[in-house]
Image (cartoon, rainbow, N blue to C red; front, side, top):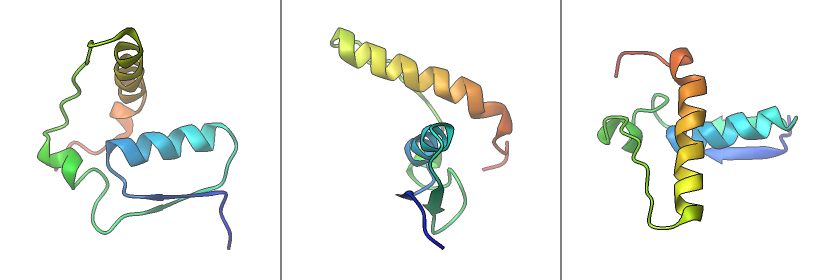
Length: 79
């Protein structure tokens, strides 16, 4: 089987990248050694911080929070 994109790691960043690629119609494979969101994402307790050092940084981190809001109900509650 072949994929358009292979994402290494299913933490918050990898999952968001995979979701966006899938929304764009790409076939996506995710390679994760453990459970989704269980590595660095779990170690950070799932906190998302809005960085506002510049307009571009604020826009990117706000977009990340919006993506989280979209998928958070689909994620397991247990760590």
